[in-house]
Image (cartoon, rainbow over all chains, first blue to last red; front, side):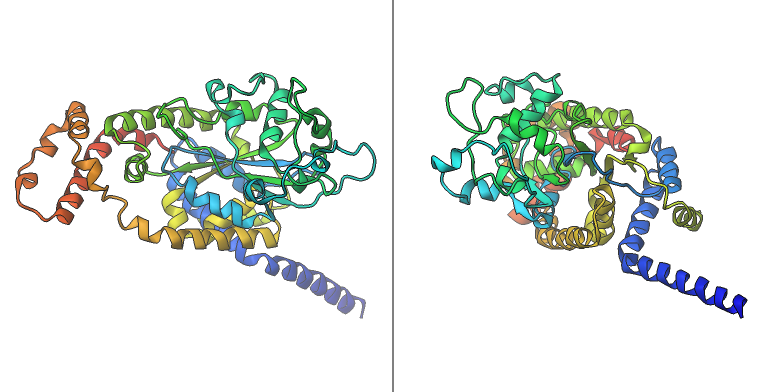
Length: 290
Length: 136
């Protein structure tokens, strides 16, 4: 009888496992298909060992207490940024960009300082932002007196520009002002906000920032991903490296009118592709989902 | 080999690591947005609801991109009828492509655009031949 009971206990335990697995089966199956494709595509390359290591170790985990997750895009212009931006926007609970335009007007009340007491409750889990300028080449962020090599300054610059404080904390009014360094206006000081933000479990999907980005055309006009990586202690930075046939990407840029000179765009894309390739190879193997 | 990978994956899926970057192929995302969405979900450690959202929106984005894909290799004529652009391409050492006899033939504008599109594609492909190989 005991052996029969043990059998059923094992069976029930097994079936419960099956039920749990079944609930996420479709995503897992699709993920396996992706891994299979990648094995065929890059298994022969220098990323092959990374792929094998990841298959042995399993999928990613967002470590509890690791801080907000910041999801950034990287890739030569024309390789799919405009494809993924609406995906990030649609998957988010809140749209920081839309709020910037449609939110409440700045009033005296909205310029209140961050409450020093009480619980700062997170309002959203996933927020869409379109923010690149705070980690661009210095020339592009000339209005920001931040030090590129100082993670804390860079962190403050990121929050200063994302304009979604009310998405992060329920008790921060929409479109609250952020105090300028010279004290020209009153508002929330980034340094007061950062310590609270770093404890929040929230994903920030950044839908902007190709290589290169915007105008004028320049091979070094792109988000500085090395600078972003320096925020590892404050943020859980995750990057989507988009890749596409470089010819098709350059043609896409020409077709949409972002560039009007074939040779110039070709050389810009070439330089940025070399940079991105070196960047990805320098990433720790265990941290690249090949 | 793939089956072995899957088996290993299932066996050791309880071992977690801290992934920070995803390599996402544009063409693969267009061909199989659900699989690409699942990979995105793994990158951001998404729960079932967020994973579903990511995949669904990627499917929607791919559908909306469908119309533009058809003309991906057909740049607007304003790029192609520009003398400076042809000079630029010529400086790459491929002037023969733009001076081929096909271009001299009386073609309707649509056919001419497509032909010039293929020529530009040929120029870029030649230039990027090694880069494409290098690209993971």
